[in-house]
Length: 627
Image (cartoon, rainbow, N blue to C red; front, side, top):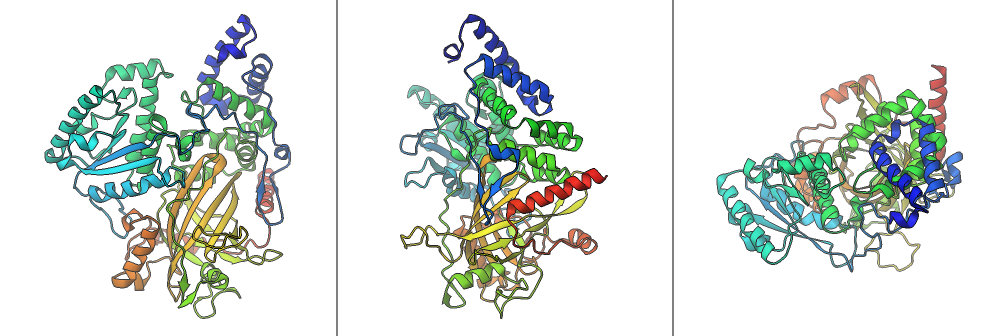
């Protein structure tokens, strides 16, 4: 491939040297002086056909364009389809991709899951069976045929035949001799069977609660954790398949060390994508890597410097922004709470402009993470004995806000609509004291709402700060809607959009259930920050005061809330934030601080998202200049 792009032998020599150099320094890209980055980009463009001049989005000179409703537009030039992140063709479809077969094998001990949930510490059997149910929903398809097939087996009764067709085996909580011995025996036999049949087991993953003998069997691709030679090869040959396997296994081990369904699912998804079949949810990557290859790294590097030179220069010459970029590079994989703490601790106009240009406006890394369409969450059909209509759907979201459109009998006339009790996504639902403020939109969009979440974040210095965001909330058509009119909408189904620190996020929200007196509601969401390569799903239980509703602590009330989460493919032990009697989100530590530092609950109002973010940046820049 390189030869076809090089004009002569001398040029080829220069390119090979350049490739080696850039691969080594690309992990340090954010810290390179802008003059060096520009020189390297210019050299690539002038001396190698690998990197073509890019059509940068002109709006990066002035700001993200928007219409009066706050919708976002930007033009990106995508990287070549043949240059997919992990070397797979992006033209693959569900019809011709290999189906990944995943077998979960578990012990029976308590798992330690859900310590801040309503039903903590389920058994490993319960966890494994739930992961089996949820994992196929993350393959990014809506086809009848899944790209991921799962199976559950009890470790005490596992047979070689149970593992025969597995591409990846995931061991969970196999710790006792009664569980370990049958599992290891089955593994030994299955390796022999697969060798005889010329088949390959791609990986064995195991959580840290498994016995040492089980953990020593972990491997990914060409790398086995018990091989000293593998560690040596990975160190001296980082481009090798052994090194790639080691990085993948390290990534999986990091995620499996957390007691979160989302992290466990993504550990398996990364392994599937790297070793078996392409998975859209995890194929995007904004970091330089050996897996991308030198050509892709050069293309991304050149596009950044070509399209966002002024923004990069401003970010790297501002000490606080430069510190934020360095800290973000060091944050653990998919630790979005950690990432957000870094951003909130170092929010600067330069950081937002840097992100806006590189990711959102010019999509320098070719990311396009999808909004997951599964599980197919059913929408609430009736409320207070009547068919749910547009007015009632708005009243449920507006909730307890002191607003003319709130339900006259149910609203408590607060400064907020709802407070979050528990949520299912560790990255998005784990911030304490979350206030939801839904209110009507003025102007032409009579059916739209604004949504201003206000929540607390602990900075890197240990301080607590309030954060506030601004979303546009538009009615949408639910998947169950029988009306074929493409412009029709379904009461209770919404699309939310925002711009947060330079990144656009779009989310599909569904009203799953709500008490007749609005003492609680359950809302499901599925969203994506497409250009950052992030897809996410979750569900929320909301009440007027942030505490578990009295009517839902036992009996029929509790079972109704459980059923609402099960419609979202979630169990109560997967939730974060507190139990039916105790709250982490609204603990005394947080509420005592809140009394001295009241939350900013005033409505942002009828101003587009981009205009509001521009105003915030200008105010921050002015404050910085006045220091």
